[in-house]
Image: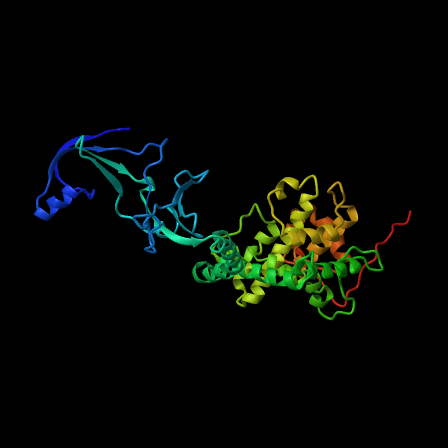
Length: 423
């Protein structure tokens, strides 16, 4: 131990109740000693003195002079956190123990001083000052064995915390978070509510998606053998000819807000992360005043992006461009079922045609059914000439406008038939 020695003239009163000292006190005389002061530092290999007090006023060490106290003092140290101590005082004839720690309860209050114990040896005239363990005076509270079990209390608190955690997090999010975080939190709440009300092994939105998927698969191939999205031959408007709600399910719109959120913050979408068709048309969102319509158009752009990237992920030539693109899990499940991803993770040729048909119908919606297919052809790694017969199979007609041929959708739908050349 390190020692610091000082010589100092110190006036002390003898704390030991000797008869001589009592007589001197009665006479009003004080004993003057010249002592040597030693300050001992704590040793990590040895435990320092532990100081505690009985907060209830009951002291198991205080008994009649004819009796001797049978109180037992035990000190427990945490196996992993050696600075955590627990002091326990028990009696053999009493079910009440006095327990306290240096890391909980009163010990957690702010402390602005240091504690130490001074031991005066009058024979050697030395005063030794020793720091106490943990620099804490431990409060000893009475505990009845088998009744006050802190583990049970902690378990109840943990259960209550788990139940109330979502409510507290939601309140803090609404008070202090930005609009984007609030929207995400609301989406998560909606998904939890739908999951509780839905099937046992699928979430509510996935259940809605599965219903829409069954309709899409049943109507994907019409009597003429065309791989086209769900359609209505008797429709009187282009929007009704290919109903949007049968292409994008109701529960899927919640996952199509990425473009809208980026543009709402005043930033631009990265050109290398989105198809050129989408990047060339984001300016249209600024002209839409109604927020519902703006979200709808941005969702169509997002859906086109996910379809194009899904095709690239399952092809040899476009895999690198879509490697880091994240498609929502619900859409991955739908696309994999609708477009028949094989074990080799390649799309069959007929399913590629179906995917392209979905993309082309959505591009018609994005361009108000007067669409120039040149840029989407580049995104699909095709030529504009190759897309023209595919658009015609959807019932489209081409009109020339300012040196460009635009695809339009006259109603009611009239599908063209492939003509075979005579030999």
